[in-house]
Amino acid sequence: MVVRGCENRSVNALVVEKQKSRENLFLIGVPCEGILDWHKIVSEVGEAVTAVKEDGQNLMVETRDGYQLLERADFLHDSCKRCIHPNPMSADILIGEPLPEGDPNLARTTVENFETQTIEDRYAWFQKEAERCIRCYACRQACPMCYCEECFVDHIEPRWTESGATPAGMQGWHIVRAFHQTGRCTSCGACERACPMDIKMTYLTEKLNHDMRDKYNFEAGLDAQSQPPFAAVTLDDKNRFTVRGE
Ligand code: SF4
Ligand code: SF4
Ligand code: SF4
Image: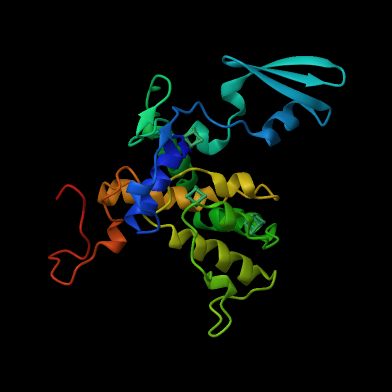
């Protein structure tokens, strides 16, 4: 497999969860400069875009009326803009030179800025995002960590959540999906990129990632051994959960 930083993390996390066997994989690592966000390019240039060429730190955008030069960094997916680990950490070979690691404060700031809003404002924002959901489950299909044979939303007996496009059903889906990623989400952003409605669902998972970093010193998939804190509980723990490094 050819892997970027986040994909290497996902492979590691899947090895930890016994979904992949590391000895059966050969990982070719590529330091990653981020994925372009087509929505951002179209909203800057308009629907007339016919081609985009990358030229170092610039983008040459071809339209029906000519060319426009844009700065590549401004048109990355949000998850790539705040990416902390662009370099594959446990590839068998690495192609290219490692890039500088990302700034953890960027991910932190996104969450902390959002948290400065009142509960009412945050809930209004969440309601607005959730009500655009068409329950297509493309986010689930794209997520490397969503591999259950039967997802909780498809379960009929008992039914865990409303399956229709009701406000309760849509909010329930988003909240429970995010909680199922606690300590498991590798910040790859595939869920958001797959969403046909451009719903900002990584706001929820990044909040959980932020809490995992701050409270448990844990980031999913940095190695292929460490269990997510919520999976590492043992009956003789002095504390309720095992914390890496303690
Ligand atoms: S999150 Fe984006 S920038 Fe980071 S490794 Fe993945 S694709 Fe690359
Ligand atoms: S929840 Fe989204 S960002 Fe997290 S691992 Fe899944 S696809 Fe990637
Ligand atoms: S991909 Fe988007 S629209 Fe589809 S279920 Fe996920 S959040 Fe909803």
